[in-house]
Length: 379
Image 1 (cartoon, rainbow, N blue to C red):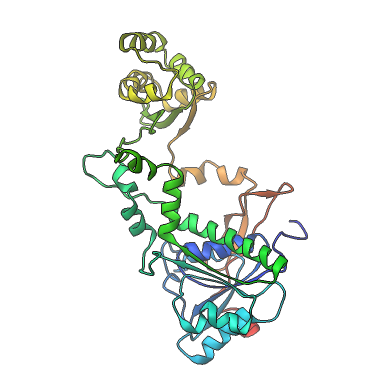
Image 2: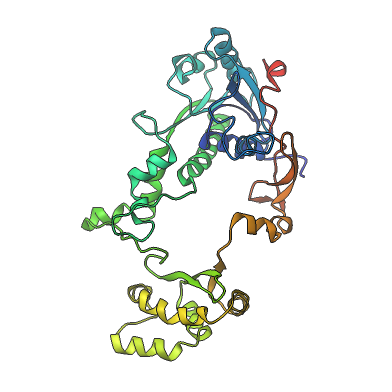
């Protein structure tokens, strides 16, 4: 582990719960910041969130709060509120930073804190930009992705990954770092507001999902496991294994036809329809016919045989796995991103560090603290 980290000397107070705000704090802690998580007495609403270890310790809570200090305060009392304000505004060049998704309170507002410390940086994560509550699952429902996930036909399918929470947490960490950099140059504090629904809208807009309907009124169709705009879909082997196959380029596509022994059939289809399979658009338009051709090869081979053949090709592919299979097959042991962490309440397990490497090293955070363990030391 390096002697110094990029954010050494930065101190962040985090009053938060659930995913986005704690992930912001975790990311900053991995990069070297001192992060102090503040909870109400007994913990916030996420302190016992599933999944749980056998003794009832929240795997979720400990995972998001690694490397932080923990302070509990009675935030309904004026003394508890004053303690929080003192933590945020304490003198120190790298301090004066608050990250929270529990805003909307005058006693901890940017205006209140900046009256005490003019260079304070506050970042408030909102559910919706108008101040109404929202979580990843409701924001996603309102955005449109469930309508194009799955087989279509009027069905909506939620995704399991809280994508907007994750994106918001990372955007928040970047915004804090940017504000700190500006303060170093100008001495100026900042009030930052980051709504979850704006993160989702910005991402969807950048990727074109919201541009199409502006141009022609259309909505992207639900195409199941097919990849929109190119050739990509899933195939099942003779023993029930499943692979995701993507042919982004002509080279990928031609090698897939070679591997599956369908080159002549693909050429005949191209000639009969007038299609040009060097174009992604045509490979997408004829995706169902092409998939039926390729599926015969997969259904005639075992998972092991298909894996070996695909490994000897340029076709983009991966076998579908469960989380349990990822762990059982040793992926974590072989990846330097993971290191053994002895977490009180859970025991030793392989925990991920920051995914970037700094001079070849992943920066990790220590175990999550016991709730309130640092209250006496820091208040």
